[in-house]
Length: 89
Image 1 (cartoon, one colour):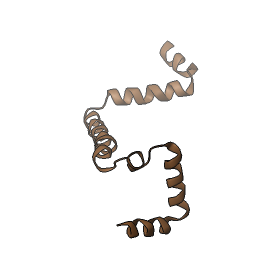
Image 2 (image 1 turned 180 degrees about the vertical axis):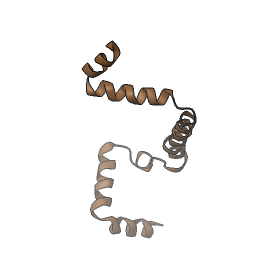
Image 3 (image 1 turned 60 degrees about the vertical axis):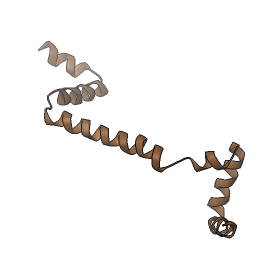
């Protein structure tokens, strides 16, 4: 009875946290699935980013001001910058 009374007096956030914590503790297959999900997220956001999404602004421009100007230029006049790049090649 005392445990039930304590649960009623707890904060809503604490009760929600305990609900999910107890649910996660009682999972069997769910823990494996969560592990797979976390591994996939790690691969997508850290590993793939390193190899397939290099920081082009960091490589091509020396200062933050040059990077900011390049981004503004590409956002405001995207077609002009592509034409300039193809003429340079």
